[in-house]
Image 1 (cartoon, rainbow, N blue to C red):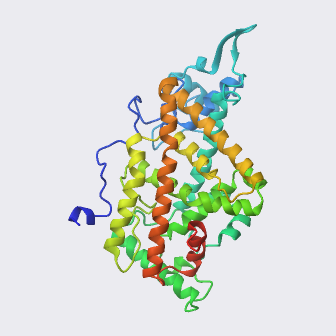
Image 2: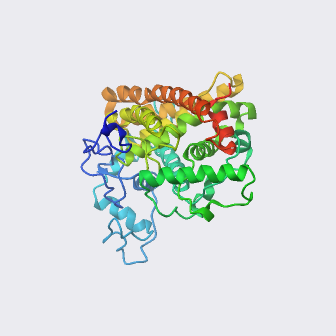
Image 3: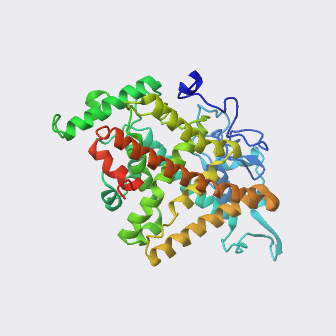
Length: 421
């Protein structure tokens, strides 16, 4: 192994701007200066401003006059955020060049241009509205997941899969926690913190420390990312309305099938957004837990990490594509579901699949949209291969380091990865 291979955080894609579409003029929303997600209504815009403008036009909303002399959006910058004034935001949309006629059907009606109310060729009412709403909802959920991942929320014990599924959803509490201090960590700090974290949890399970011990007492500034992200993936799935219509046995089977692929997609895409060529945890370190053979383990993890990152980088996945694909992954039904459960999950999968296809047609046109859609769905095969490789990797770790993983983590991990089957 060369010295370059030994460096866990070296990126093979240095110099690439992963999030910049070659057709975009800028990466910032011209309305609010947040990151743009492509051109919408003729200008680069974020999801929020795009949806705001669309709703204002389609619903013919007249906002009350500004209380701040109509200056809310005049001197904004990345650090100077505007007042929450819809009147000024709407005016700013027009000022930066948003064009409303994209929201109208070209067919004439008695009153001239008719608002889109028709059913699209895929059975989706008002394709722009439905897709925007889906993406906006998924984006809100993804923000909550991100808030949890960077927060101080750091449970000592991770519940088993059954308890997670049956418990109330926790995502609404994401804003209740402060951010974890001291990030980013160096790779050395990360490994040292992981060692201390595992040691403390093993001591608590062995009754060498009181059960009510809190990790804050030991200045722990990292998390056991695998079980933590498993928890977040399950909480994400529980937000879908179809999930409540499933029998518990179907919920359990679905989570065993989709949880790891969902968390893998989340961690990979967030690393991609951070312009990394290898998976990076929110505390700033590349995944590499402490083991007896750290160098060999780190190298193997890095190889797997590069494999899952490469398609995202090569194909320049956009945020909407990632969000819709993640919803499809959650609906990746297993043959172990009941026939009733399979029908429910398959219907949801088709809904998100149609939305993704429609999005691809809208963004890339009829000629390129179909090919783009297939390219995005092919990433599911990458996730399935990654899941199999990771399962084999964890089985090997458990054989050679049986006492490394605390019991509280082992149960959830074994259930999600089906290590005991």
